[in-house]
Length: 166
Image 1 (cartoon, helix red, strand yellow):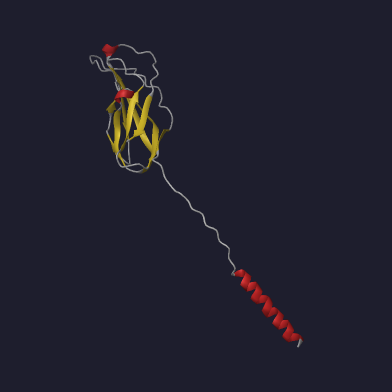
Image 2: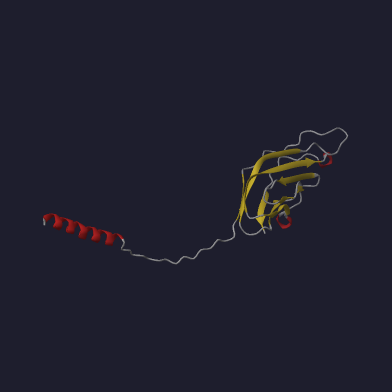
């Protein structure tokens, strides 16, 4: 009898435990999800000084100098029609040229583009048809040129603005 009582007690206890294991309580929440258009562009820093120091005798075009020490990265989720434009804070004086070339894995590079006279009002496309996604560590190459007829140019700071836009 004692054994039957113990077995019966264990059986009742196990039914109570199993029953409570299957008991549930739930709650629900409604969420609103959205992703806004994202345009992000950054550069790895500033290029070194571009100083022309030589030329060829009898030639007006002095020997141009280049810098390819910086890169840019982008992220965009808007469309496959975005582009990068480039412009200077102010045009260069006549006889001096500044060209830029941006490599691209997500779009079409315009190659080497003369931005000497490109200001905010006349920014030039340097990469077009950029697909959605990210592109990181792409090369930026600047080339600075001058004619002997333009004369000397004291160290002049210029700001190049790269804009990711549609």
